[in-house]
Amino acid sequence: MRALNQADFLKIIEGRDYEFLINGYPFELKVSVCLSNQQFHSQHDYHFKNCRLPKLIVTETDVFSRWSFENCHFDELVIESSNVTNIEFENCIIDSLMYRFNQNAGALKINACKVNHLEYLSNSKFDLLHIGCNNLLDKVNILNNGSENTDESEFYLCPEKFNAIRIEKLTASKLEIGTFGEYSNLFLNEIRTDHLLLRNCNSKSSKVVFKKVRPKSQNRGVLQFMDSTIGASVFENDFFKSFFSVEYKNSSIDNFVLKGT
Image 1 (cartoon, helix red, strand yellow):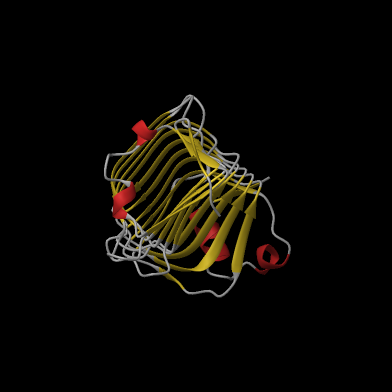
Image 2 (tube, helix red, strand yellow; image 1 turned 120 degrees about the vertical axis):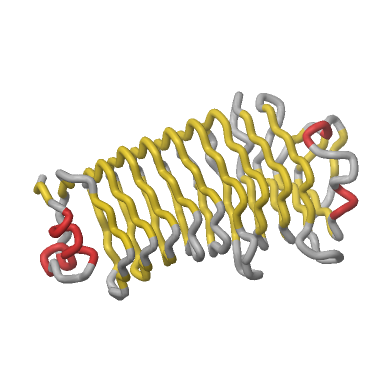
């Protein structure tokens, strides 16, 4: 594995390391890297595989290329006060991931990763937040996001294995939850979405709370249950009334089976 310094890493993400662009190679950053007040407009997609980046901080920077990390290891990763297009993590180990105060957070995808601490805070606009299946998460806070989101914004949550996830003050056009987890804590408060889909959710062995979950606009909200079994105590009394359309498929609330398509 090659040992790189900050200048070497800059050469890669500026598109000047042609060997990396053509073939890629694993590397380890030997120093903490801080990218501040910079612009990366390269049209290339950067695929980092089997790399170790102990500490990477991106602040007040525009990143308009796509960065994907596969089988990489981070001790600390911070993306803040920036404009980002697309960042993806697959089969990575991340001790601390801070994604905060971004004017445009773009798309963030996390799949099959181990993340000890994830903070997604005060990102006024995002296109996609995707926390997919096969992740192992400990502590997650997703707070105060999407205040300037458009009609195309989506949040997908299917972590399967996690300790505690707290989501508050979030606005997105579509929110899909693919599982409540098992023996876990999932708390949602002050959520605004015109399409809420609960798929493969079972609240029997988890602590789940929905508070102040409402559509973004009147007469547009769609609530869907698919292949889910959920206790009525999860929701507030007026939860169902706030949505214009409620649809059920192979689902039940408490012991009452709801039939529909």
